[in-house]
Length: 319
Image (tube, rainbow, N blue to C red; front, top):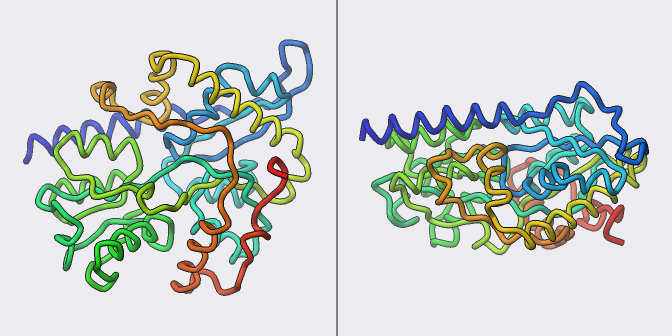
């Protein structure tokens, strides 16, 4: 066990370093295209996640400039830091989960969902757990009052258990959740990539993905003010996003696999383990997904007012 713990700890340090290095230097926003046209800067705050890859490709391949926008993808080490930057106006928009969006609306922010993204959470079990029912009486490490806790409760319910059968432990930092698993201090944890690949490569069990729950929890979100001020830039971002997806489909994975290491934080040693998603062109979040997440937020007392999903969806790109 000590050998495994050391290995995972080393990988976690490498991952944190990679995520830190991927943060965008935003000192200059005055950028022009190759044709000398002024580009509109659009800064997106994200957590290191696989659903950001098309946006990164769009910028690296120059598709954003083709559509009149200078995409700046800023990766944060924690959701709290990302949220603080969004609230302060330091980023134009964020990639967030629907429960977090509900909390923004509860707080009075005038925000809109402009599209879904292809993110996911997985329920990863410690070495001793093989089935969700084995978690009865155990702790699950999550980020409470956010998408990770919602996902954990959904997994538990599908297995025939109730939320009272387990103990949800609030662990905001993802690497800390991994350490709890490694030390057998939690029965399971909700994790994103690259931590899913890292832990399963060390022998832990993947008990399920939010993809199995028939809900997409992730969305790109902007304030209404930014949508009105940068409407053309947001539209250009999605055109660039679609160009990036087409480019990835037309090219071998070797042309962009390194991005998953440099930008998401996958260790080089696990390069062959990376499962690259089948990226789709931009699509809008389903009203049913919003309703499901908002209903849960209401049950938890995180959202105190009824909000029609239609009122949260922007038509800036999807008319």
